[in-house]
Structures are given as C-alpha cells and as structure tokens.
Image (cartoon, rainbow, N blue to C red; front, side, top):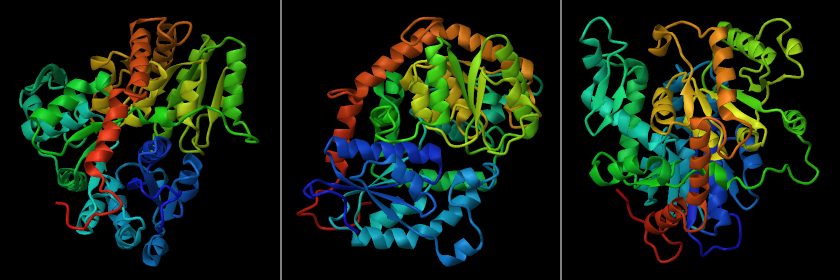
Length: 494
C-alpha cells in the first residue's frame, strides 16, 4: 500500500472511520483538509460496500484502501454500514461484526509505504487502536461528538444523576441535577441518554461504551469536531482538569474544509438543488428537515411529521424533507398535496450543501452532532428533536448553552426512552415559529437564535481560516503526534 501523491517526505496519516455517514463524512473532510494544507499524505480505509460513497467525498490525491470482510461474515449477510440497520439497538452486534476487519487492517498498516506515522481511528473501532499501537503507530481517536457531551458522559457515569433524580419519587421528570464542575448545567432525566437514565444501567450498550472509552484513554489524542469559540471552556476543562483521557484537539468545524458548493464540470444537478434554486429565485425561505440516518423512526411518527409539515405549508412554510427509510409511508397523497411548497427526498443528500444554500433558513434536526455543527457553521438556526444516543446532550448545548435553536416539545415518556409520538400540531407550530424566528435572511436578522447562530458561524469561519484556533490545532496535532516518514524506529506507543 502506497500513499497517493509524490510528496513522500510529508508525514503519512491513515484514517479509518466507523461505517456510519455521520462518522464517515467529517473524516473525509479531515482527509481533504490534511491534503489541501500540505500537512500529510493520506490513506483512507473503507470497505468495498462503502468505498464508492467515500471516493465520491474525497479529493483524488487521497488513497482509498478497501478492507473486505472475511467470507464467513459476508455469508451471514452482515450490513456494511449503520444505515442498513433497523435501529441503534443492533449497534453493539454491528460493532462486534466490524472487528472482523482487524486482520486486514493490521496487514495494511504493516505493509504501508511510506510508513504510517499516525492512525486516526473512530472510537467505535476500539480494536484498531490496539492494533496500531502494537505496530508502533500512534493513534488519535475520533468520537464524532462534541466536548460538552463527552464531559457530561463522564459526569453521568461518575455521579449517576438518574439514581438521584429518581430517588425523590414523584416529579422526577421535573427535577434537575446540577453538574458540580459546571453549576449552570442542570440535567433532567430527559437530558440523560438511554440507558444511563436508569439507576443501574446494564446491557450490551454499556459494554460497548466501556470498550470505546478504554480505546480513547489508550490513544494519544482525541479529535473533536468543534472550535474554541463554541466550546472553549469545555475543551480547556478536559485538557487542564480532566485526567481520564488524552488531550483533546478541537479542529472543526470540519465541514468548512469541504470547499465550494458546485457539482463540478458536467455533473448533473440533483433535483433537490434545482428545487432550492427555484425557491431562492422566487424569494422563498425554506425549512430543511432531516431526522437522522442511523435510527429508524416509526411510521406513525413519520405520518405525524408529514401532517405537521403539510399544515405548516398551508400556513406559508416551504420545506425540503430528507426522509429515511427510502420506502417510508408518509400517508396517502401527502407528496401530491404539498407539491410546490414541499419536496420529499428519499435518497442520500449532501446535507452541508443544502444548509449552505441561501434560501435555507431553518433546520428541523435530530441533533446528531454532525448535523448540529453543520447547521451552526452554515448559520442556520435549529429546532432540536433528539432521537437517541447522545443527542439529548447535543440539544442542551445547542438550545441552552449556545442559544442557536429551540426544542421540539416531546411527551415525557418519549423523552426518557419510552413510547409515544410528537403530534402533527406540535410539528406545525415549531416549523412556523422557527421560520418566523429565522427572519428574512442569513447574516444576523430575525430573532435571538438567528442572530446568535449567524455570529457563531462567523467565528467558525475564523477558527478554520489561516491562523485561527482550529487551523493551529490541526497543525500542532500533526506535528506533535505524527511520526516522520524517515529516521523513525518502530516501537510500541503505549
């Protein structure tokens, strides 16, 4: 395996993302950023099933190495990406199945020329860090989340706030837990991710969580897709006062490394981009709706979303809805009734490109971190509707800390991991309020949240610009952790 390009004197960085779009996309942005800045030659590991998507996101001078699954795994019909799963509940089993790639990774790392000086591996690929260390290759972990949620995760494990909140009996849903290190942060039961919102959490998710954090603790650094102006206090706390993990490197927003918004010479413009261009030409503001790709939303809830968007459209809200799964039942005749005011897209879309479009003024989101940071970087206020995983903590950061969005009200049972639906009338109200708050355009008009996100977007651009905080952090990380191509002697790292 040889890295792409002829600048072999540069350090050689290998990147290995977890097989989920929200984890893979920012890693492709990182690969392009390292190349465009001339900081390293880059090799990007993928699987045959994911490689076509990956190649479509990367510059030509990034080498892609495919790691095929062993025949016995393929024979069982194992999925090659999280999006092929029905929900997050099979996630631990999927992570375990992906470990079948370990021998192939080790062979590729050992054979790499020039020798790999740093492996950037997703924490979900926890075994990859041990494999690299055994070969004398330093590693830095990528978690895909923000610093706030990372620190709150440690607080939750240490202090078990769910037990304290539930011990009071009635009214536990309204009770709050003040975080000792950050007294202004008050966790409710709904803010604590499942299954940590139970007094004695257990099961496969807990076991997987332990493996992830062991990998992070054993790595040489932690990449965080954030920037100082957004989470400086939390990055500083982790690096100065925290003792449970390696140094955090805030090098985001990585989406800003994506470059221009064009499709390239001769490329066919997607239908959704043509639709947005038409709305922009007509002076219409558009609400973008995307509720994640890694968790299946029940059909009953999707139909409530459809009903809410239809009511909002009747009140003058234009919307673009990226739906998953592709065969989702949105109710008979829905798409025909909203034609002209609403567009439903059932294939994968370039979300960053959509959010950058001048007519997109609001984002109804599940608040996965990749989506949230893209919304912030694009200057688009969010309506936060967390669906699971660490998303409730992301929503706290977006709404309570940064004040760049609003919450979608959800039933109490649903917010704490139980069953229920958010009604169409709630969706319609939030959609209307978000678009009214967004004002007439990006850049600081409208309500407080719109002004705040415009200011934060400006600071995001400053962070990644030459001399900015994220610009300098990436350069320092490579210089500090990545072994040079020549004159190094392989030895175990940790």
